[in-house]
Image 1 (cartoon, rainbow, N blue to C red):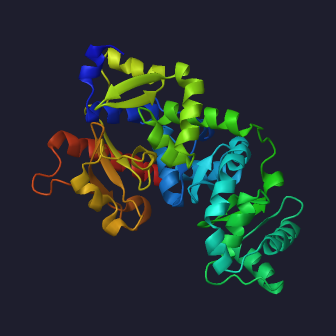
Image 2 (cartoon, rainbow, N blue to C red; image 1 turned 90 degrees about the horizontal axis):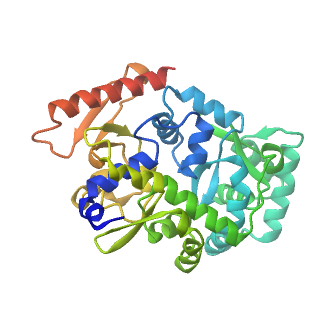
Image 3 (cartoon, rainbow, N blue to C red; image 1 turned 180 degrees about the vertical axis):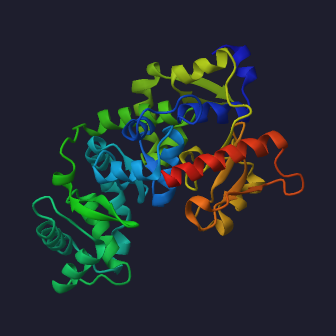
Length: 368
């Protein structure tokens, strides 16, 4: 990029480039599976939030369409990194876990000792679970816990959920179809039949490339935090793929992104007047170690009150977070209420109108 291009960069422009990379500006993605593959992985600790995150990126999609993609195994939800649920393409889960699970299991070892979870317990529970879901079946968490208890494996005090997490890390089980508000568990090899095989070096390089293409402009530290890959490994992977990315300098820091996204700088980055109602936990905010470019630090407490790890729904305008929103219980007919950071002046008339269109889109998504 030229010096002139660098001089045009600002936090708002970086935020809008990220919106474009994430399919939130322009035509979006053509299908739910394409969106998940394009995004590489998406935070999914809260199921309704990730459904709407995909609804915002796939024009015309509804909540039932996205739940259907989960039910059919076209996308998969598990714990691939940071000990947190994400959705990703089914063919990617196995090799990603091959990179991340060792470090995650090691980090959980102390807690597992406290809970009395030893290797023999994991192997016994794997045998029990696979017997319960044999032949392509699926079982609820409650059914699995009952089977564990019957075999003398306690499930109270979070021991049960840690056992299930460990079975998913070991690729014995995977969350499968949705039943009500929870997912049933299936055998990994029955539910995921087309896994790719990548070694650690090759996989890390691909993962990093896909992250910068889907989340850029972002930094190597952003990827390291997001993926859980150590910074030294991140830098080695970046060296392998940097020729397929564009580097931007801003504030003395290198940001990496897809050349196609960087090309938007040549003719003006769109989205200056775009208003979006994004879910809590959306990758636009959560997908980066440093969120200060798009969220003023003085308002961070309003997004995660008390630092409790629960991210509220956000209003994004011009590439920056300008408030939160709420949708009280009541389904399709419920009101969608904006809560701008500027409580005195509220949203400007044009932004208020745009937010109203977003609220209508959300109600259609719920009712489709």
